[in-house]
Length: 446
Image (cartoon, rainbow, N blue to C red):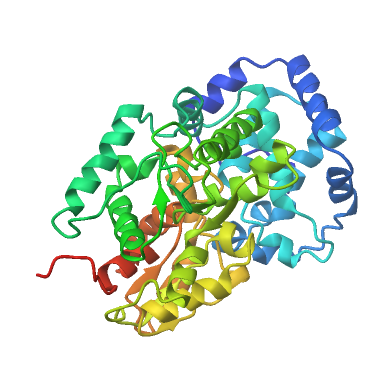
């Protein structure tokens, strides 16, 4: 089964152009350079100890959503990719690299749910990351994902936002807020602020209202805060997912350095999961840092702090019941499930848990850069996450009309799932609900 001809190939110009340039010699050289120079005992132990017991299979939404097809199981993906690269010592052809790239980039969200089900603790997400790293070094990456990584490389943000466009967007939101909060400012380059607030590239481009809302919450809470005018404001990192770890390191360095230059005491990141992972788990390790040079917290933690200390009070709670989607990178990766439930219980009348939930929740299927692989692979996401649709439908049948998801990628993935499976659910960020329903002592009276 595992060595069958790859029968679900999706055409992608980036992958095809990449393999057209390959030779067997280049593949062998690159594969072995990565294995010998960038991996070690961890990969060997994972490869040597997997006993193909199959316990990881039901953890994967692709496997579940494809009627238990073993080729979609975590062990099956390993067997079809990195196991062959290791066993054959890189002596494979270009078509096999295409297969590796499609599986690693688009059929694994690196969500690491399977780690919780493996009795030996094998991290398939790590093994798929190694495959992506090899594909990146071979120049075989999905076109849309590579375009985004190129934008990071050229502009230090993923959306080609120019420096003057960034500050114009902030000034625009400050002006927009004047009618509601006459004294509200979005401070730029304030030295020594308690909070440095960072966002992801799409916010100034497509979701400027989130910057408005964050500004309103920080203003109402009386926080001494700032945002940077210089590159480093975008905390997102698609290079982490394309396998361009050199670029990932540059992005994390400039993000931290922009906060250090302003002598900020703490970085508060907006509601994004992968960006948070790139900071606390990936980028800092690649840079060889023992710890972060500036404390970093996710918005979930920050909102919990504001509510616990009474700096933000709710005028009324959002009508429920709602349900909670636990983003992989902040819940399974960072363990913020209790803080998330505290915040939701403070701002909503009631919530109903999705089943399964917390660290066992199913991925949105957008994470791991899969949504950034673009339209060629949208159907891969839709067909590969019927399990999430079933989860959401079960919550809706209990009266849920709103899903709270504190992650940008999750919003993108869930919006597609909700539309594709006609679930009729609404999506909210925590900030949406807090801004709309908090006590606004500093706002003009209507």
